[in-house]
Image 1 (cartoon, one colour):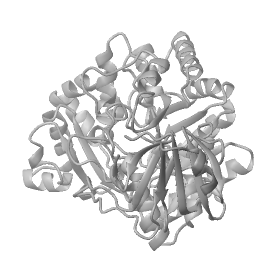
Image 2 (spheres, helix red, strand yellow):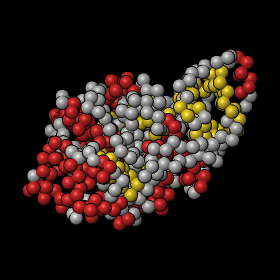
Image 3 (cartoon, one colour):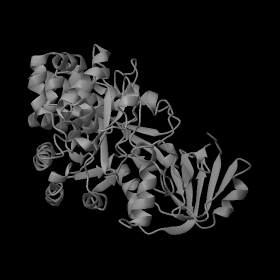
Image 4 (cartoon, one colour):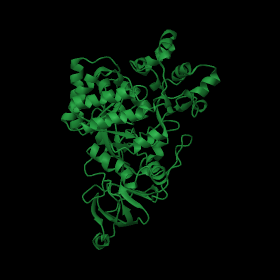
Length: 511
């Protein structure tokens, strides 16, 4: 990745990340900072020397580097994976949904077993503290990394993989660990209340922890308890936690999953708007896709995961316990819409096929097949679930309180296409073709807005003195061909990406 002492971006249109109208002008970068925005950049050239690179941006937009405010690339940023970078992302907020790579418990494998389905790790990852992880992440060549500390990871550190009510001493210890992480540089706290052990947390436990977040002036992000039939109750709970603790609230990947629940979304948005109007600092994020992805164990009652994957597998293998679990299995969409994207073994017979198709082939019911597959694959199965409506997606993406995210998850099979094409989809199909948002609104939702929410100092704007994170793209050609069947497709229309003043993508390829 090339280093020039100076860079001049000339001939383009500047969309500065604030949501204001585009302007004509040039951008001058020295070392890692933007030193000039506007006209007369050519006057800088004589004193910038032979180490100056001039990038012709004619016909292109000069925007801040995109910020993925909801990422699960906690480990891949350390591997310098480039899928996000190629779609213009320069900063990633990791540690979402209650999963962070720290703090390690006495038995590190307990944390790895909990998180590997989402973080897609190996057998040796893990850090003792936020400062240790952030020190490693600071060496990434592909992203500036901001990390949330995960509620599930904290719970495992203190009490193991259990969903039981915590003792006062355990909760005090968790609060102390959370406070330490925030002081060491974590940008906030995340919960994953649909995943054991976080699913066992009471509102009071979360209020206690969020009070620490409020005291440190950070943000609380939440994968709520439910996005389907009890969506409204889940939203109300999180708003109540924010009000009681005084913390800032970010509701993760908001949606109403399943056709029978689509009408609930407008009521959820109304509740969020009413809370905002009475002074709650609340926002949400959403991805511009009609399908989400997660682990197959998510459709189980989370009490079945008490003690971790090994205990779950033992329960499924026991005929009596299996029959106690099976009636509580619930998909948020029809089983024909739940498609396997990766599996640990014999994946060719499963990947790309729906649970309903597999059940029909095996002459069994979907609930039994879910349990069979989880046991066969030792719990290592990922799915895509088609559960959203276009009308609801429009309402989410255009809402003034919304940010746009990837929620990208790496898998061993077909990763969701959002990992490869979210921001080109936003700026191409959503902005240019559907005209749901203006270009400046869309750019704001992936630059200045998340930078402010997560207190990413001097990022998210094209302005003098700001860090030189810049994405240059062609608004007429930017798009993605990534699909659910063929997700790993490099987007088109991204001309150049600079991170900390360094040219990391040049003419659409890694520099």
